[in-house]
Length: 362
Ligand code: NAP
Ligand code: FE
Image (tube, rainbow, N blue to C red; front, side, top):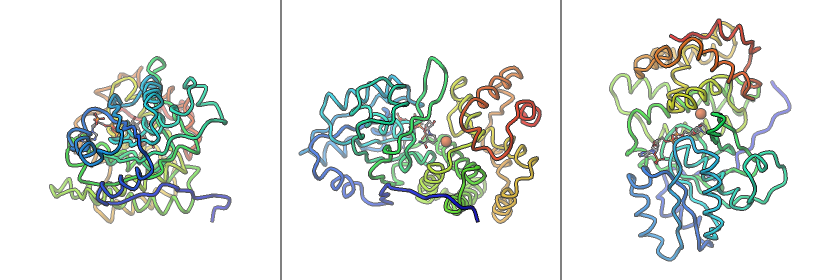
């Protein structure tokens, strides 16, 4: 067995508990709270009205300006908003964009310094405590320390990560997934699958994360098989799987696949989960060529549930990589990905010519 590894998962995750219970406890000694979100989910789920009506004794400040793939400017602005309103805690509500943003704003609220300076700094004031409530089932941001923030000028996604950036609490309440557009819901399920798959094969994987990753892949493949057969998706199960996958990547990080996907989002505004899904068949082929031993275990799960994940991608998404990228751009995408730290977690030598030859656009 591998030696020299750790497992650390400090977030208290409340699963399918009534929100009133979790939020009352989180705000027990807090008078003033900032709620970080985008514009849609907080209204469509009824969460904003629920908070206003249920917590009349608290000062609640809403910052609903988080866009998909949140930018550095938004984080700085949200941090200032929390500071100026003297918020003592943060509720991050929404998809991975809102939760990543909420976690980052919570640290910028307490550290009034430029983005890259705080990114590079090892000494900083502790962030405000965060309660994260995910309304998608893909990123697992509610249980890890990462905030993926976009530098718009450089067209780059930066992983802003501090060891103190874990939320204090997370609430999985799958009712909140019901207002999500089906296309985004499925895209986020694929994001969670890639977290489990990449975490499983990553050089940084360990026996704890392997066990969790296998569990996630089983749940997701079973649900995708049901979905393709026209049966229902089990939302509580998918919410849970997404969080477990978030714990996996909190330890392992992601690999070349995620780095390639970032390019599709940065340059073509493809949703993060869909970007990963579109690249997955080609990335799997690449892994198969490397005869990765762990792939046998993934293949076994697919066999057990009679689903090839490559076929699932093709039957669910109309988009094809070849419709999005020209050959020249394909090279740009590979060059971008090769410069991301994710390469170090990829379980084979990532050589430019080999990747260009082996990855395909179809
Ligand atoms: P998202 O960008 O948070 O949300 C996608 C869209 O769905 C937004 O327009 C959002 O609107 C809407 N939405 C979300 N929940 C909804 C609901 N219940 N009802 C109606 N609309 C809803 O998507 P995501 O896939 O969850 O997050 C992607 C981001 O997470 C990317 O920036 C990615 O890089 C990052 N990420 C982070 C990690 C991590 O470990 N921290 C891992 C993977 C990806 P509103 O925002 O207006 O509500
Ligand atoms: Fe992801």
